[in-house]
Image (cartoon, rainbow, N blue to C red):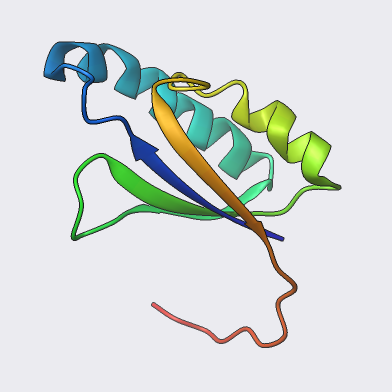
Amino acid sequence: MYLINIAVNEDISPDQHEALFMHHVSWFQQYFDAGKFVLIGPYSDRERAGVIIAQAVNREELETILREDAYYPNLAKYEIREFTPKMVGSWQ
């Protein structure tokens, strides 16, 4: 599994961000529906930034998916960390 921190660059204008955001949301939905994104959400303490927990066959598959994002490659920073879940709880 992968933890991806995404932070949209601060130098993007509000108009540019608004124009790209709906494509970004569609991209989230596409890969959530496909089972590749398990958890998605914005940070509550930072504007234009959030986290994705993803499952992919390998890092190459994940990078192929990330390349489809509206902000990729130069309009956001993508920090990717691979991890192995050891415990999973339930939450609401």
